[in-house]
Length: 419
Image (tube, rainbow, N blue to C red; front, side):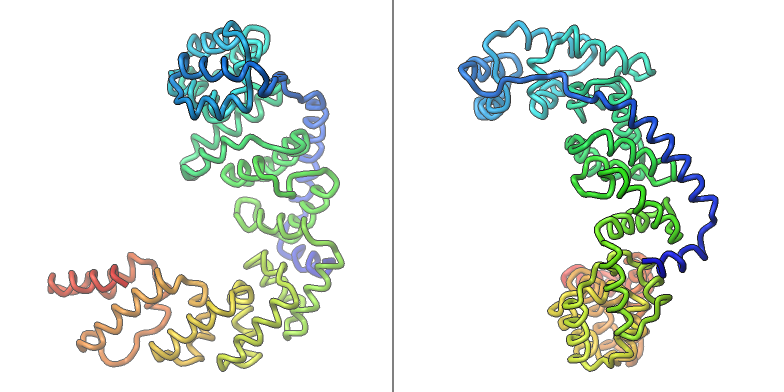
């Protein structure tokens, strides 16, 4: 690990770690202020109020009996006064019936919370921070468990994360679904650690998935700080996904494990610099086990590649060492036997082994074979990179849409889409 860190330090400015130290200190202060985090709802689950609960949910919220019965397994009550006060409070704050149904489905325990003493102050606090009525209803509907937490700072931090995630155009709609999984585990640690990553410049779309995940990198305190320091010193850019990947990998490996894996690569002919470059390109490459590496070598040698050629391919495209033997054989067989590209071409373009055979390689190659059979691009195979490495749009522009014959273009599109 020490050797990898030394290589990384050559490409990272030392002030980044000083900034990180400041961020860690700030986060520690934040951590101390969250020591009293707790839920304010103490539900009674099941019990003799189950039948009453089912009837109430059907009559008051329009749930089907099946849905109501499912919810009643998570919470039950015997009187309607408290749930009525909760529903009335939500309606007064602008929540629609649809949003209220979503909230109760995701977090039914809210129905037995104290509307005036617990829920109302939280909604008022969020409004006092400048949340508009539409923002408030959208965000609380997305993460209703927010109202089950205690402490304005805790609520504020999570509210901000959800808000920024929903407003961030770079985040896909799948992140909105992720919001429904409220952070589990030690919330204090997660808030502190994710706040540190935020100050370093890690994009929101990565932060929120880390926050709600049960995976390890943002759990704990000392191990997180130790791991983060290593990743920063290695020179990973915090604004990229590879920074988060590296954080995941390094967190899960001991010093002894890392040294053992570096030695595995050395046996393949890599020096430490090569291992570092591969790790920078593909952080998960450091997770490769000895068995996986030996299986990969055996697979590639069996297909006619030399050991040196395999090492060269790994240096250019580290993920190829983790591809399944079955998939490598299928792809190599198609490229070298059915398409007749020489083995040296595959060695020079190892990324093609990472492309989907069914969705990318076969459709494009079928177009090329048809064009060659008609003498429209000559009898010689075009360069592999121009066929497989270009984007779909560029491939179609170069080999399909450029033809003036509309009938031919339609035929080529049929071949491309039918493959």
